[in-house]
Length: 316
Length: 57
Image 1 (tube, one colour):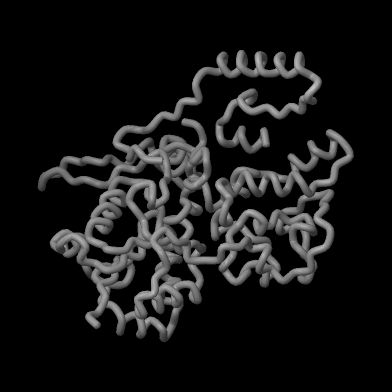
Image 2 (cartoon, one colour):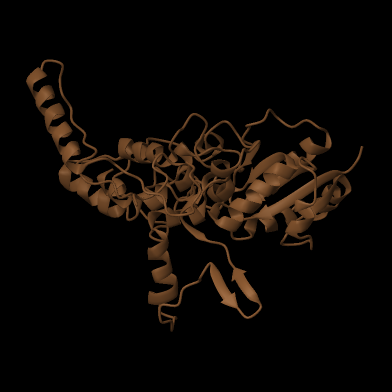
């Protein structure tokens, strides 16, 4: 069998997805035996013009991590889409917007004002990046940043979704194995579980009733019992499983990085509904106290999912 | 829910939760008329798109 051509790209991301690929350790050699890497900015020195020179559909698989929030990321997403037979949204940012999409609670002007002006460590006098700058050698250009962070399939067609912040090594190896044996699932599949995280959580579940919400630094939870029942906002009921319950095993509540569970349209709304239904109250005072205890509901319930939520962003 | 919608910039009054029994026709009509008037006063829930940004989503 001819070697596969594989491209890896990062857009609005932290680099953790690229590290996750390297985290497969010695199995990376299997990947190298299976595929020729034609683009991987973090590790391999190929340039955009090498990709542009290829005929369309020349790359077998593109693992694209990161959300789309500027003109360069859009351009490269479209370029890689045209050149790739299979496009994989790799990681929570490409699938749902991820952490970068929390910027959708602000607009570009607010972000720039914070980053370039009001940030305490800055000494800046309203100098901002300019998309075009005239220099003696000619005009130079940088990408244009947008108000809104998008998920990859808002911009280009995507065949597979690998959620996770980052996708776990077993899931990556499962995909590599599927590529090697040509047994990929039907296009449109999400490479994870069809059940919720609660379904694969082994903690003891008793009565789902809470009278107080805790933030993670406020209590040390019982390692055996359901975290939600202990008052921690564990995203398990609204979140897709398949991660191996890693955070839960470390006594940390789920933060929702695998995105909405199968059949759930809006992860945050689902979670809000779950919390509202288990909160035991004795009237308006209790309700007001709970609202205060959940300090940042939108940021908590949509931590990874803003771009895939129904509202997608704060109203501009 | 109102606190969360406020974070999304959705104005108070756009979303409202009421319980109406099947026998309370007048109350039902009153709530619907009141809601319609309030939302009309708020105007359309318009989303702007910044210049040069992909028109998606």
